[in-house]
Figure 1 (cartoon, one colour):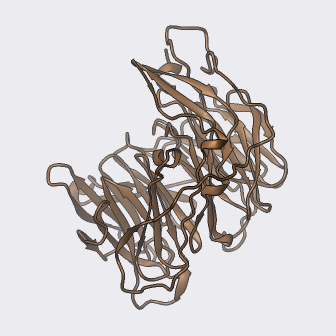
Figure 2: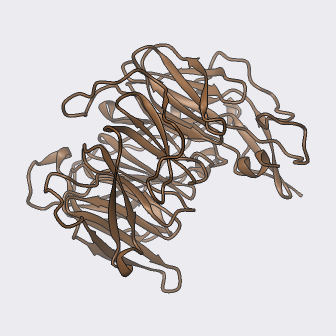
Figure 3: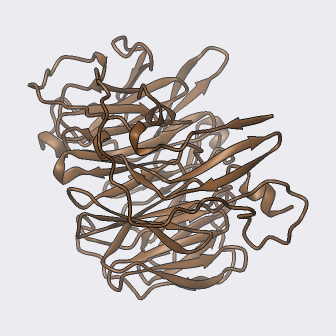
Length: 465
């Protein structure tokens, strides 16, 4: 049986989508609304690139074994940190297959293994999010996939307008963009962006703040702004979260306000975690009762008031979360089941301060890029080192605040990791199986933000065949 996951978008079939928040802010409104978009025929920005028409066997290092489908590492979207420029690289051929100009320097986001191949380019400085389609298409054949490729497409007419789009989350085919400028949330179905009826909705918390939202377990979970604590506006932080059914966002189903200065979010198989000034708030989903149960995990005794979790990573195969520990040369393991069920936050020391960290595609390894330019491979359940660190880029001098600088980024797909270096225009590649450097991608400019899209859902199973 053959099931096509998404159809290629021919230029004549691309439709217009614009979501605008032009009216005055309504401070007391919590109603979710449909975007009210009216698709019309419109232009599409196409790259000057020759499409990849097929992938007879895209499996990396294939020996022509027993897996009858194709697999792909997908494509890497690289955004310039100083110019409104975005490139798309095919990670099987290591060739640039698309170049696009947007309206401001962008940050790319995508669901790594989503078969839709949708990439969102948030442009906080220009109140806009653009949409790319990777050009990789999957066809399901019984227990495997076949892959075909074409040039990526910039759906220029489907840009989304909102006030300072900042925090992006993706979970199970749903993406949510939190707009700091007015405290609203834009949430959308990735699959629907490729259809005649794109599903884009908005919800407002009523107050501008530096917040977060996620669509998970068929609920919209959004940050609750601090009602009194300055600073005001888009730099104000939340005090907790509220949640409501995704289909009925006007009705609040629950709320927890025990997370002062909330920042950072991650979602795994059965819970959502948020970083707080004094610990971590976890919403545990009960599939029997169809309800969230809040759990507040306190920082370890003796933790200084200046140290906190503000960034979190998760994977559906892992029962724990990984978090930062402010600017300390350490990370933490957040275990909701630890300490006899009360939950625990356990710091582990790094050789020096981290620049960024991510879990690999299987959740089996934690990769950490530190300011000395080395990439570390760790056990995410214990924090123990697994192999000698690799010097991937020269040491990077962090700005005093660590904010606003064009800095290196880390992206992971299948059996490769990629580290951007905006100082010399390269993206360094690391073979995770050999734990050794590959030749860099010569991107040019100041590559900073990166997103991987269209990794084969069965990549690891096929690769091990």
